[in-house]
Image 1 (cartoon, rainbow, N blue to C red):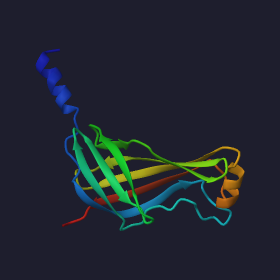
Image 2 (image 1 turned 90 degrees about the horizontal axis):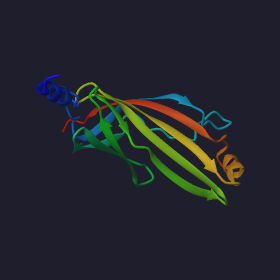
Image 3 (image 1 turned 135 degrees about the vertical axis):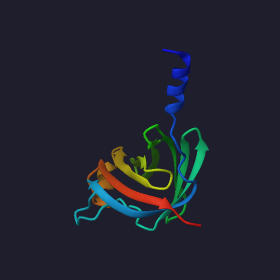
Image 4 (image 1 turned 90 degrees about the vertical axis):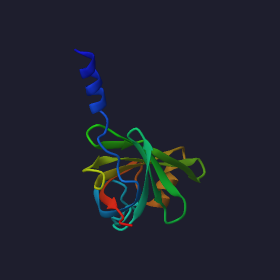
Length: 162
């Protein structure tokens, strides 16, 4: 294969655009599946709602971060990579909490999705809740849920017009 064609193929493998940097707003959110249900049918997972905003920052060469503020303070920051098909995957975020003696609950959120151009995002989150330790039955009683469990959420977002 001639050298110029190899270079052309390599350059063509990069994402053709960067998502629009700035504030984005979720306009649609849905639960795809959820096994984190309490006996009353409510979930222990509190998904974002339409109107929720997050910040997107392009970090170069097909990578970006998102930051979603949490109602109780703090935020979830996701480091993501955009591929040549306009799909993205993010590194998992995990938080472990010892809520009862010898019962550590770990909540892991993994995000991914795609863009239809720089201004339209289709994405989702998989949230896994696990427990380790002899205190797990106590945690299941406190939260009224069987562990491990998983929720899969989907949403669409667009940049906020400034």
